[in-house]
Image (cartoon, rainbow, N blue to C red; front, side, top):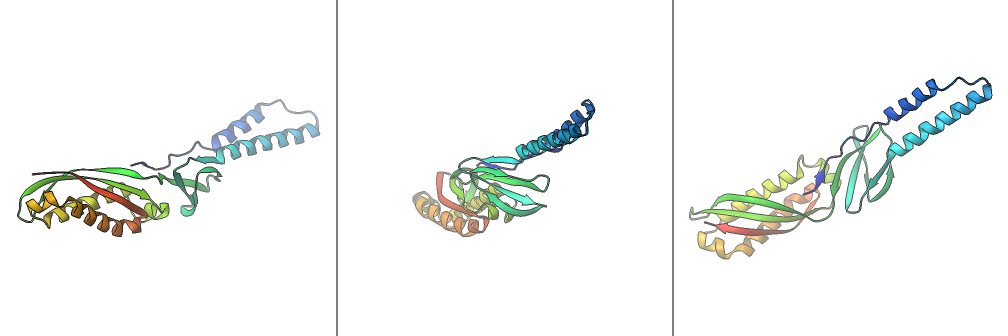
Length: 199
């Protein structure tokens, strides 16, 4: 599952300080008009560097959340966008394409206390990035743990013989419960498939 936290962008202060340093090393102008020209050139260069550092690109299939002064401000969709550091930053970046989560094998017990090892695959996609970011701490871990809990509960409600013949029933039960819970996390679970049931 591809969910990435935004890494810190290059600082905008460093290029500005470098530009000012170059201006201090430049020969001192002898004419007052030259001073104005140099100041305008320096201002233009600083603005150009700052504008370039503000440009962000969001690729197709991804979305980003922007926080201003630590609070959610807007969502960036695919394309070019301007941010205004240090007041704004990308706090969360994730794909809105369908993703696959592989649930590792888990020890379960049937209604007649027979041990089973079961694993599953979850197909899901983020439909609301704001909820996925702010309503749950770690989306991937939350979805995995929810599936594991519900898988154990579904297997525990059936006997050993019923478990092997009721995969579709377990899949439907998992899908229904997971969508009911995950909707508040901004996630739609499209399919849950049990891969293996082994005694």
